[in-house]
Amino acid sequence: SKFVNDKWMIKNGFLNDVQEHKPWWWNIKVQKLNLSAPLILLPEVSCQKAIEILQEKGYDQAPVVAESGLILGMVTLSNTLSSVLAGNVEFSDPVTKVTYDQFSKIGLEDSLGKLSCILENDHFAIVVHEQMQFSGNGSSFMKQMVFGVVTAMDLLTFVSRNDKK
Image (cartoon, rainbow, N blue to C red):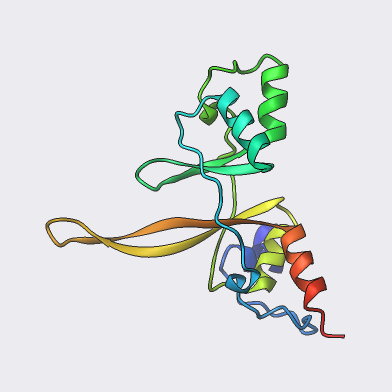
């Protein structure tokens, strides 16, 4: 079960990493990956427009974020195309119909080791940064901002470019 799976416990923040033979990069922070700013889609973007934008910009996926900043999920080019071709959605449908709402988030201050654990099961993680925002009446709240999307290829590229031989 999950509660005895150390990798699941680390991924979900219930356990600090206890791996004894960590690679040199294990404790480096996610912010060192130098990720590029993500392409973000609003929920009302149509499937057709999402496909066009992703193809034009050369992205395989993009977070779908409400104007309020709430992260609704992730849309992928392959899932959008296959859903349209299978007749499950129309080109005119909003991209939210093909948005994956199950996704992992990781912070800029988290370790590449934690990211590695996440990427063992997930194709990507959304990198978030928490920011305090104040309203006109002086009340404050924490808002998560999407800082990037990270894949196993990003981690592998970082490790291979910086390999401590």
